[in-house]
Structures are given as structure tokens and as C-alpha cells.
Length: 110
Image (cartoon, rainbow, N blue to C red; front, side, top):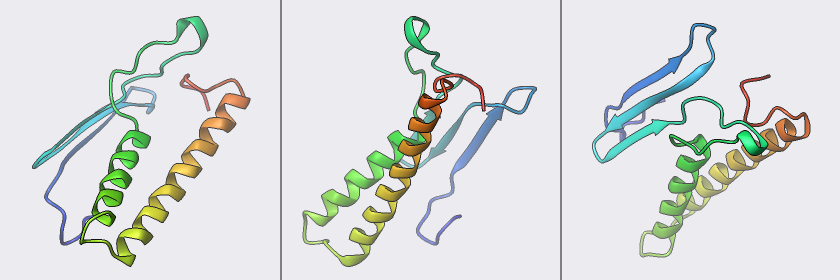
């Protein structure tokens, strides 16, 4: 979805030969995101992140909107947007917890 306020973004999502997401890039004015490429692993084999996660970007966006709401630009629409981003973060946390419970978090397994 591209709104009228959005700069044109160069979006490149990458997958391996099996169709598994492996990273990618998003670039635009004042914005450069390199997505996590590959699983982190588990336990003693866990690797450091090499890119951003969707959760990182959502947190950055919600913190910016909170900053606006601490200024003269506070408004209902900002508050509603914060609520919806927090809801998205809730569901991504639930996905993480579900994957952790099944022992597949940090791996390229369904």
C-alpha cells in the first residue's frame, strides 16, 4: 500500500531457491533497511542478527508517533495509529511465542 504521503521506495525482497525469505532491502529518502537474512538458530548455535526484523521497524514507527503525541502535533489519528501498530506487534509476539513453544523459533521451519 502506498499512500499519497509516501515517498517512492525501492523494495527488494529476496528468497532462496526453495522460496524461503532470505532478506532484502528497502530504500527511500532518509530510509535504508536491510532485512535479516537467514535464521538466527537456537541455543549455543544462535547467531547475531545481520539485519532488521519487521518488529524493529514497527517499534521505530510507534516510537516516532509517540514522540509526535508528546508535542503540539498530538492527535486522535496518531493515537489510533499507535494502537494499530501495537496490535501488529502483539500478533508478531504471539507468533514468536507459538514458534518457541513448537521448538522452531530461529529456524527456517514452519
